[in-house]
Image (cartoon, rainbow, N blue to C red; front, side, top):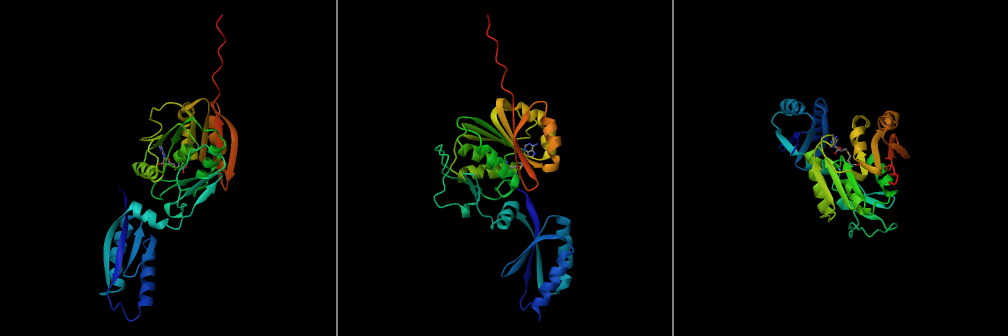
Length: 298
Ligand code: SAH
């Protein structure tokens, strides 16, 4: 598992005649080393960095700020814990009849229901961690909205770049027969697995690790790909090939000013039929032509 470089700063008591100015001095010194966050706990400060070299330089510089009254310890904090702590303020998000909620904001009786009800909201619980997709990014919401406009009951779905597994779970909740979620980031897949368990899903969603450009999967009725404009454009042929005749591809992660280029890449194979936007992001549904009907043999 990835770790974040961090420092634990412990103050020996008595700290100094003037603890307030020591804290200010520490904060000012830390600023030179680009900390990403400082957590002030009762007995220590935890200071997080993205870069280990910054952390090490800060560890070398800090003792001089308060000679004799500060203990500096280097730590490597597991990624997930840090991500969780930093996201504890997240709340539930509703898109149409789908609610995406972190465990602490999910209704007590939240269970993913697949009763085909088109009116009752379905709650999907997502544990915020390193898998992208808590519902707090516009691109996830755009895909969630577009998925609800389709009748997924009995359909096959391929979720490319599944991240937290959120869109796979949305498709499952909307009645998809089978969903395959693909991601090349093992941490993302680990969080997706955790989210399947949290939602009580034991079958119907299959997770696979790998770059979608090298995986061989069966064509699906609906393919979701919330990636980036560049990746969609470069992978357009492969994504288009993954859509069954007459099926749909839902894309997002595309900035409005990238849209023309992305659609041009799909142009020869898929046609845009729906277009939604939020802030600077667009989401779209493209369709593949149905198979030409055969002329009956005489
Ligand atoms: N589907 C989720 C997450 C989207 S973030 C949502 O809608 O919120 C995009 C995801 O695509 C990330 O988890 C990233 O690891 C994955 N990804 C990026 N490039 C990929 C590739 N070439 N093959 C497979 N997955 C990829």
